[in-house]
Length: 179
Image 1 (cartoon, rainbow, N blue to C red):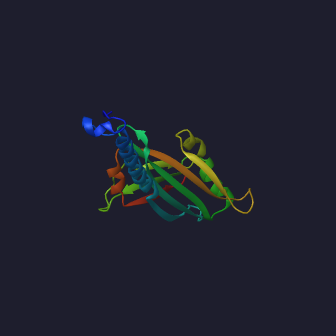
Image 2 (cartoon, rainbow, N blue to C red):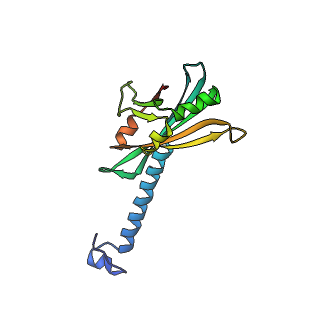
Image 3 (tube, one colour):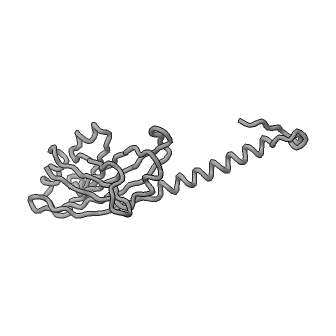
């Protein structure tokens, strides 16, 4: 808090006007909000096609965004990881078993411009019960009918210590391990 005066007496007393202080704080808040919005709008994304052991194909699209408004530890934030697993050329049973049977998972690796890993790779279980116990969200994507599941959207949140780590990430690499 700073000492301030109200009205015309601020100049005589050599103190700032309370209105000036409030206006500066609001301007700084607007500037911080624009920086925060810019970080959340900037995302890393990728897409990769995988062939299942039985010959079916799935596509995994991933994206990562930095959210600085969640306080984790000291001044850090979190990465919001979104992955969409789409059925390209697989039977409904095989595709749905990826999310029912245990063992299948995707691994997301965070790579910088020099092809070095930055953060600990993120392992996301495809088994819905196992993932939900780790606060991972799953949502079905339907085709023309509700009985036809064409994809599963996954969202995970990972604490990250600083904005600098996020800015160093150049790309995401995705690995897939079936059952």
